Image (cartoon, rainbow, N blue to C red; front, top):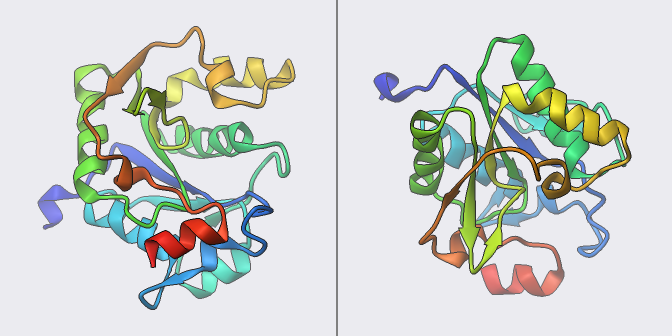
Length: 195
């Protein structure tokens, strides 16, 4: 399996949200005995991406679970801050792309991750992003580190939504994805569906 390890791409799981709708830290919810954050990290690792950081959230708890954590450079400023934190970290490590996914995806698949990663070979300057039921999935995309200056400029101008910061950036859309794969767990009733 070592030949499948991917070295030119970094991985980031965003875990800095407040989980207000859930009422408690959803990254630590156990599904079949495994914390949600670990399920997501395992899927990413199994797809061949080993250089992985959890961005934001309860770094002490994540460290106990065996995960490397990266403090959010912009805590409380939304997902764009987490994406910028991840891109900044990996750009310093000479990575050209960063896979960024949210921590609340119990069904994320290795196959989808590999498909997203393959997209970087076809269009290396584009953000590779799934399109599910007509909606771009900004929280589950592959970002070229080269877009960091554009994101920082938008961020400094008050933009906090990833899609708003990316309006002028090239996109490669991935279609035909089963919506269940990117089902996110935001509320207790979402958790009930998964369980």
